[in-house]
Length: 432
Image 1 (cartoon, rainbow, N blue to C red):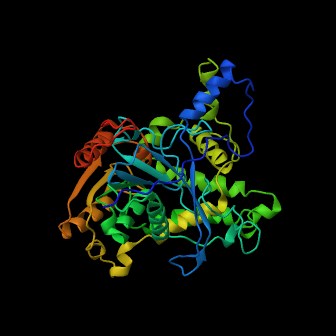
Image 2: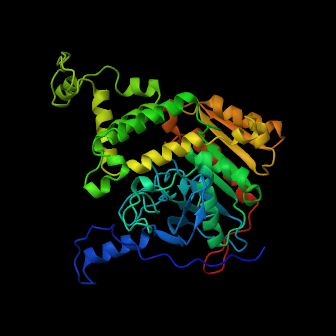
Image 3: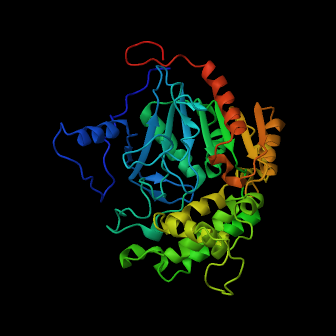
């Protein structure tokens, strides 16, 4: 296999658009030196423009598309140590480390030097999918056909469309075959799709807290969340940008619905129980507590209500409503067995990768039963598969949290992948 093509150097780390950094202008000033040092350590954001037109599964076309991505570690000489990380609904390309805005990557506890996915051994890529609201082309960007924001006119994308576009990024980076594709939740669906669409382009598929399709209940949750957004008077048919408003009420409710499904009953009971807001505030003030009710139907009464409202408020301040509709619909559409008469085993017949499938005991959104369906389909085809069902109390969110057993499984698996790789060499030419 020929050596990799060199990608364009990443841009200089910069403050987010619209923000300024008040810093001393004198180069020798200690504060300025500290800021420069921090900027030098920040994970740089990289961009690639795909000219298009790109034909999607719906038959619609889109393009040009700008992809935002980041990389960690060093690509080895034969480009065999690359790992692609696929993100879930409320995540982005920023998978690890600290970026120029001071934000820590969403999977930083799993990815990095010496961590389960060791960036001293692997070249790890995080990419923001089109349609998202974290940098890659999406509904907020300008539609070249109209000169206005896409809004509701941004084409519906499927998991398979995202995987196709991710493959285009790998072509740009000179990576013909991935050591592994890794993803959790919706990201796990993308990892599975990789093994089906491009079976020769990955050696390992790691699917965490995911499912081979959504159940009717899961589709129902998504629909209720979408209706909350669509029926918000500020939604304006998805073209709210032109009106200078955001359908925050709908986004808040959508997030509250979704967040309930990410947590287990046990974790919610342990964290909140039936504690009232007034009792909690009284105890925080040093008092003996207050067990009385406020007898209100509209104000916050219980602590769990306060938590959900806070999550909804925070989410509505940064997430795009059209993106929420697009991504939840992509979740709904993912069903590789559908093209094979509902037979998941037939869907995986031509996969060639080795698999690691991980589920969590209290995840009722993507339950262990759904992971076992994937495992059974792989076993039916005599594919190599490892399966771990982690006893964890945190529900679906467990895939994002610190758990020694979970991280140990991932570390051991990637350690075995690394053993088969040529050594990564540093710039001085010595083995890293």
